[in-house]
Length: 285
Ligand SMILES: NC(=O)c1ccc[n+]([C@@H]2O[C@H](COP(=O)([O-])OP(=O)(O)OC[C@H]3O[C@@H](n4cnc5c(N)ncnc54)[C@H](OP(=O)(O)O)[C@@H]3O)[C@@H](O)[C@H]2O)c1
Image (cartoon, helix red, strand yellow):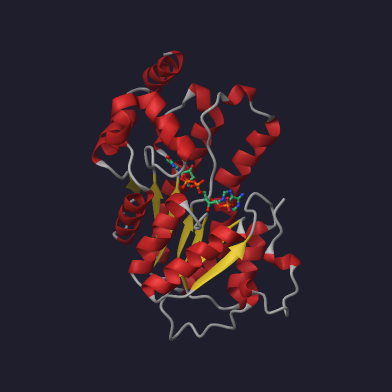
């Protein structure tokens, strides 16, 4: 299990702890992005950096976080904080919130992006892996949202961007729990949007189709969709740019890419039993 920054002495001058109290009156706003070191999270981080947001990136591996920090700071003249933290742990949200509050971070945007999926049949997966998925995909974003609400409320108008998936629009037999976690994120976001409207906090939910982030996803998408794969899938950079633009425009569901958007509309109109049977048929081909 990854160490957290709390396991390091606070006075050590470690790069994670070096930020002094921040005078929020003079600084551009901050955005906190979980899983911001690579993939879609990094795409979102870069799109925010272009808009002069300072960033807090959270992930487990220091090397990728440092690479992201160095590139973003040198390219966009912003300040990037990195937090090494395994978000699947129950204490994670409290630790991150404490870190933000103790520095009076002017938090304007929270992006709950870290999550896992996988292409194999989940019925043969271990229960530990399923628990990990449920904790990371659903619980971590819920807990961070609850904990960081007071900071977002202090910096309104503010934004929450939850990352789900097109897989959350209907049940997918082979990916049983993944689809369920993504639909939980969509439902959670939609309800929260109504609850936070009067507080001037806008909630959005990114629900992309395939995004070419890892070699496994590229391989699996091409295997499943053949010729269509390259037409439907988009890059993490483009996903991040669209996600941020629409979040700042206060859109609720964000599905980047024309074809993916069409498919998502179809998934939301057609009865679930038809979609689920279609997904099941795809698996047998
Ligand atoms: N790629 C797609 O096709 C696709 C489509 C729809 C939705 N999504 C969703 O988009 C999100 C990001 O996917 P991605 O493809 O961009 O993933 P990715 O390229 O694998 O990046 C995942 C990010 O999350 C971090 N992370 C993973 N586990 C973590 C943990 N336990 N604690 C803290 N950070 C953790 C990773 O850094 P470390 O490994 O260093 O922790 C990395 O920064 C996921 O929620 C996924 O479900 C992806």
